[in-house]
Image (cartoon, rainbow, N blue to C red):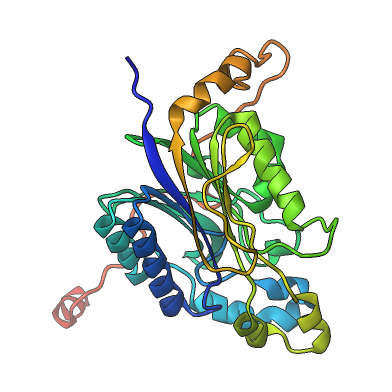
Length: 332
């Protein structure tokens, strides 16, 4: 008989130390330790947590934000690197699966990536946001299908998306096709104004729709906004007012879209926890499996290309060969 695990999961709600790689990684590891101490076997982090979301892109033109982009670039996560090593060690000492969203530097460009660590501390894969949203395109490049994984593990099939990726039907279909069971839904903060397109109500509707459509447990992780972040990047009163009172909405959703587990206030840092039972997914799959019996492949289908797409393909060893002084003399 197939076994469907029961386990404790956690979603983080916290603020990064904006544009400070070392301090934010240290805070990340502390939060992993807290989750592990409370028995969480899967721990989810907000979008762009390391080293913080680039909020200046919504405050002014590109010239205004260039100095902050330079700081972000210098504080981005590189693989391999010390930041990855520290998170790896935290995942291992807490025997937990950890999904951390970071600004990743690869080559000369930045990407928004969810990094996945297993309980042994191995970096088992990553998901890059496929398409940055609106002004985010001035910061992050595109991902591809090779970095849209679902990991088959002893605690269930684990996957994740970031922010408005949850609004794209083809993303949802691609994840459903991989039989995801526990989903990490990473977000920045939400705006407090009622009806705001980036308000917590709209974000949660997207996450709840995802949970119901794909019949998954959804770990929603968001940041909170702090005076320290405001002081770091807001240069005018208008900018300070624009970013006033943004708040968190971390929670854990069942496959029916209902919130389960512990509760955090909108301005509270910490982790929300829930005990989940993957067997609860089965009745939902009886009713709707969008990648299986409830699909209509005869006339509606998706081609999901998981191959690696690189803009430049380097063939052969192009590295220049160094020559000693003696070799130079001989060659002449």
